[in-house]
Amino acid sequence: MAKEARLSFEDLEPRRQRGEAIAALAREDLDLYAVDELQERIAALEAEIARSRAAIDGKSSQRSAADALFNFR
Image 1 (cartoon, rainbow, N blue to C red):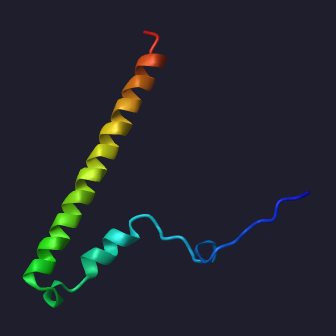
Image 2: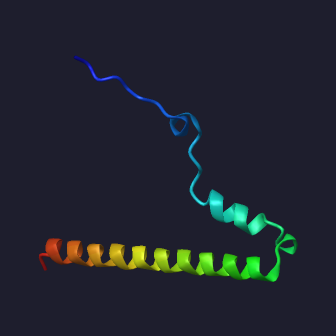
Image 3: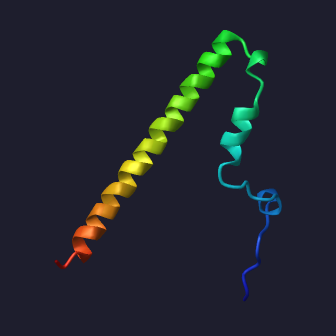
């Protein structure tokens, strides 16, 4: 019996382009936000920075391990 492909609404929506979300953030009018909302925004952005740095660290260590494995000199 063949499996049926199941589609969801997410499958029908176009994927976001790389960097699109950060570009949208940069275009947003900050005058519309209250001080506490801006502080929440900063906290969320700092959390994203930490997540990005962790991804860089992980990729760097994987690269170092691969370089060490394949370096025959």
